[in-house]
Image (tube, rainbow, N blue to C red; front, side):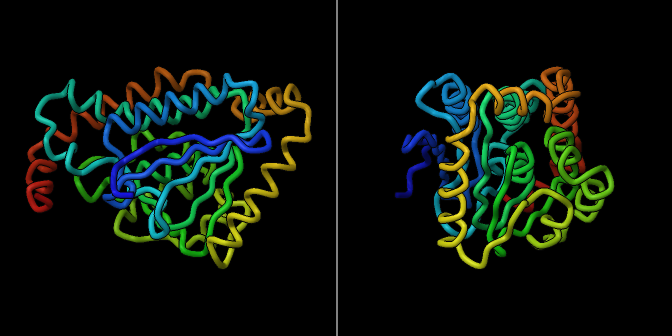
Length: 250
């Protein structure tokens, strides 16, 4: 399938939300909006006890925001709306009353690292190297920064944010606390995710909801914080530096 999509399936109490875009799972605004809404709806669906977040394809989990859209931003408001896309998904994940398990099968970049960081429990394959490449194009990981810092700590987040050219291996991400387990193959990952998610369905949903709130304590201001961060990126993307850099990608 080459058309972008967001789809949800429910099996044995596990709601699996899958997104896909043919451009290495880089996500344009409409797909991000659909993803945020799907996560919110799953959080309100009594048939779903636990959520699994995954992407289609096998090479890349998520290459971040859509470059095509990024290149076409010509005013601050469009920039703010564009960067709010990932902010809205991260906030939907944060507010969702159910545990979200991340299934990261391949490389993940920029906003994709933000999505992985916003899951409550994240499992990956050894191919799931991570990179925060935003500084390369003259912006920074402002919107995803709080989610990434919450998982990797300020030291780990600043390391990959400054070293914007390097992919950090899945094992590094595991040592820093982003990934709980790293598997040799996607097949092994899928088996583990399925078993883990189905086991969680046996627990008291109210207990899991209370635990989720406990884990996310201190992030209550993120609606405002991430909106402010989206404005910073929206402003920087209009800078001469970024405009010149982005021309090389046209």
